[in-house]
Image (tube, rainbow, N blue to C red; front, side, top):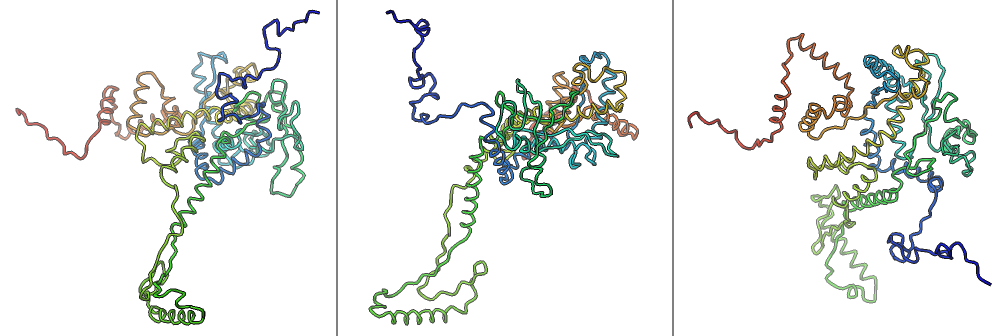
Length: 550
């Protein structure tokens, strides 16, 4: 009987499973024979299967290392200071073309000035109306969000509607601890609920399960609150954000965030332990042990013999003679400890109590460079060590930091602040607080919500290493139409409209007082800048002008 051939035979495929890793593949990293990687067998899981089971421990360790390691804590502060700075300013930029008003630039200017003024007045009020807990202004909320995203990998907040007498607006933001977002009663992830987030079939969040109290809260007024969950919708029926949940996704189908420093936690903890041990060693090395040695004229056997009593008699006589000789001497002291005048044949020996270790400039710098790389900041900023830096190296280091901070600003700080601004704007429109919105396209129509609230944010100034060189470069970019005043002033954290208006007021005042200096033309300004930027050698005497006819 003729054997029936399988489809695999007809297609020329192997009829049994073949492990091509065992047979040897094209990638050495996937080889099962190389002894360096033969025992390396990580699991191949989904994003949630990797993150959710380990997320609690990773977040707790990240917070602990930030609390207790001064360098890591400094790195978090650098993130806040570089991204947010002292004040986070709104720069309104509505999309006129999308609104059908592309030629109405006069309205755009009036709209920007009104919206920015009223929002900043509310958001930065000393009464902290924007914060449901009445502790932080908008700048404080954004700084908190940046810090939380570093340790937890996500930001969680709720949009509250507070009806209280005296509030200018009802919109307020309540920041939420990330561990409060969880499955009810700690249950495992099910089909549509992933660690407290209910998602649809596309993975989009539908609602959030949030504990009514932190599971480790010290309050004992309502202990049952920690075991009660409330399900909040992601959006209201008319599209208003109810929960703000921002994640810097690293994987596809990732539901919860994870800190970016998790991959370096082991090294950070080991580094901190090493520094502690080296510090203790340095303290021990700063102490000393002292001993007094004597040259015994005879061996112990000669003195003792077979009877112990003669040795004790000799020792007593010897110590009595030493005490009589040096007991009253008070001339020599070390750190307040009296050193007796030694009996003839005695020696004072000082020995260090510990030994030195590899605690040194190069070794410490190597450890700090690792931490700096994990935090995406430059070594110079983290260590405050600029002794080995020059202008070029500092520019390169700060540029790398600026790239990392700019991306985090866009993904975390700007998005968080824009969502808050959009919530306030919607309420202001419905209250009739914005005069420039009267008679304009409906806020809820199409994508007008996004067109009206399109904006950028002015955070911390980038700073300058050599102000003359960088100011000259900024002037050249503006004069060459490669940049604008809005961009250049924005890098310094200045609102260009407010800056120009202030300059106009100053010029008017100077002119009124007769102090206004004539401005040089662009060509003269360039020459003056070039002359001011020329290197000088102050150690050489000034060259005398040559005499006429010489």
